[in-house]
Length: 213
Image (cartoon, rainbow, N blue to C red):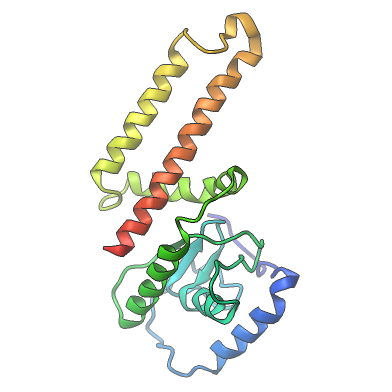
């Protein structure tokens, strides 16, 4: 786990909106003291406090659930937000907490609403590549954890991995290494790349369906 000694820099285009959100959050007096704390070595770049009800975006940045939802609702309504840190379009919220308190239920309802609106938006190949590290990390972590992904999804990932391994081990490649040398590995790389993209797409659907249930 990376340790952050400084707060992530807010993108200049978002500084005014983030400043307004900070003032709004600081003025609220109904925040509970016994809220769950996660990622104690990390802080929310909006409220500058330890992340509570943490949510990770598809671009891999962590925020308090209430902060990123307030950022969404205070911004231009009707479209997906851009990450306050990297300006990448946020199409998926990944909650990192359990539904245990009333505040958590409200945050999860807002997360469900956001994901239902924007998780199915068309995405370019470059955006899918940028989402790969975060989505694959969550997918494989849940795959090998108790009570994580349901078994049908795990079986699909296993079958995809087996198919890719069989292709990599097979001498019948589109570009045989014996004839094309190092260029012969391009088709192997392409197969693995497509596999990772497919797994990330499946996991995105699983997250959205899980919250809807």
